[in-house]
Length: 482
Image (tube, rainbow, N blue to C red; front, side):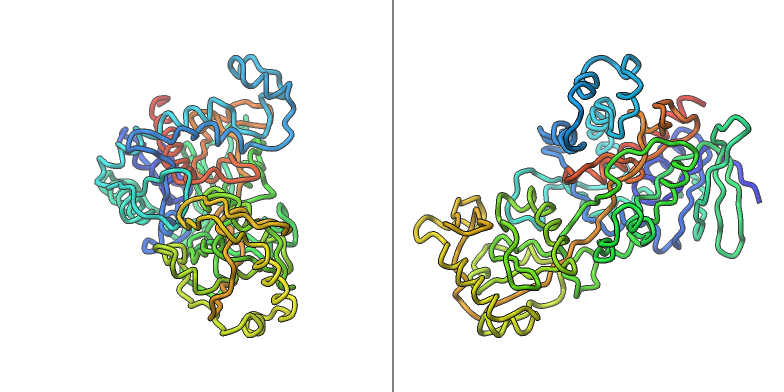
């Protein structure tokens, strides 16, 4: 069976829907392929709170571009980075043009188009506000859509349906179609109950990363990936086909394929994003009952990912935050707990150790050493960095170091969730997929997590914006070229 459209979009999250609506608004015929049902459409986008790294409705944060640029890899060749910082990419050497990092123009164009994208969404009826977040301490403001990612998906899908976009549910993109010269002319898909369908048209790959694909996780991240779990049920739909089918025909990789956005969650909970951000007010111990990380080097929003990665490194990828009753004096402390499972509780440290399955003597020694290292003086300010640093303890705890001596004692297990993978495709400033020689691949675009942009550490509150902005940019370019 063959289908012909101006634009074929693989994926129905905010990236794919932004592309579909923008194309349809420009008078193009559009197909959206969604492997889930209509009720489950939206993938991971539906479950996210959709934090947006913005200081005002029409302004990104001051560090938006610099922070993105700082997270594009370690030990970069200075000659190549200096070349990338001067002139346009047409004047760069072949090596520089093909580096597996986003070009400065990509980051700059991304930032430049955020305000107009938010205004466009407001025109579709989406409301935004600076609402309370799960971060009790933070360095950057975060704008949120009222109703979270579900509000974005519902507003965009409703507009797409109004404009006559064709949705194909239970339909999964399998491979890209090319003509005799290798130019992309569409994609082959499989629809439940129908079988194979060939969709002809310009293609926008917007079907997420590979956090829902254990084979790719093991391939790129190694055997420890078995200790990871997707952050929400929608993430299981993200199996990396869009990335792999483009790499198969010569697309350039970009981003850190061996890493992912890490978030601390309670493995006992089945709710979406059962995060546990309360650990700066206690200590983290592994299955041996030992501390292994500075729990509070800075504000939790800036440091939680790096701390969660250390949790992932522990035996069986799990740790436990140990707290006492003092945590209940932290204003709004429950905001930092999204798990729906109560804390494990005991009257004594030894009793708590027994309940969480760590050696009682070792945990007792760990708590005693920590308590003895807590400063005797100095103000305790749980909502601001207070500099209450442990003395003579390795690793240290840099803030909020208060003794754990007010029972009953509490514990939450924490594992690392895989929010999304970092590896993806390299694109031009308007979302055109580039090949391994740095050339534009005609008729092929990417948006959202299919685009590789991050290394080592996630630039918080930019992923949803990446989907929204590059979905629009890709569709606008297709319309302009028609």
